[in-house]
Length: 269
Ligand code: HPA
Image (cartoon, rainbow, N blue to C red; front, side):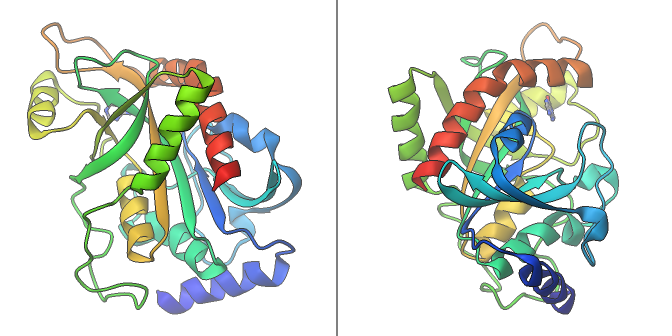
């Protein structure tokens, strides 16, 4: 696996004309940011040696390089989810490649179900911590030389970036929540009993991504910052139906504010 990562990184490096240290995973709620990237050059996943190919509706898989404001960046349009059938090694492969390319800071977004009674649909939640409930650990197996066998996880999301995001949000008058993201495999949304259990466990929001990528980034010493769009609510007295369409709609509505925060954060990174 490590050889494959290096092979992929070499292939990309040979074609890179910039040297970004910032990467973005354009998850739900951040699609629009792709259109703001200038001086672009792109690699469809299908052309990159060893890269998994993304399948989910609404994501066209490619790596985009260019500038966001004055900053050189690398962006992943389309991520790999465990529920699609990818192995954890595949889900986190792009983050391993990012490390080899010199990335130091990673920005991620996702859609999540809110369980904190203070949350509303459309809220942005800055992720301060997570609970990993994926059935397979992304670091299971032979340890990669990028980090220790038993990595410390006392600060999975960079606290300075969280503080910076609070400043940005306050300056722009954007309301943000803070919270713990629980990562589960999906693809089912939660039953009412599951929502209640996850809330009791200490989760504020729940979703099907991000945790594997953040763990691997952490193992490589890449600082991470994440925001969830709260697209639905669960765990309350009156269970409500959740659909993918509804999640997309809520995420689209919250998109301009998510984009504003991320754009500014990336510029300051
Ligand atoms: N649960 C899990 N994943 C999700 C949810 C949810 O309620 N909403 C958006 N992604």
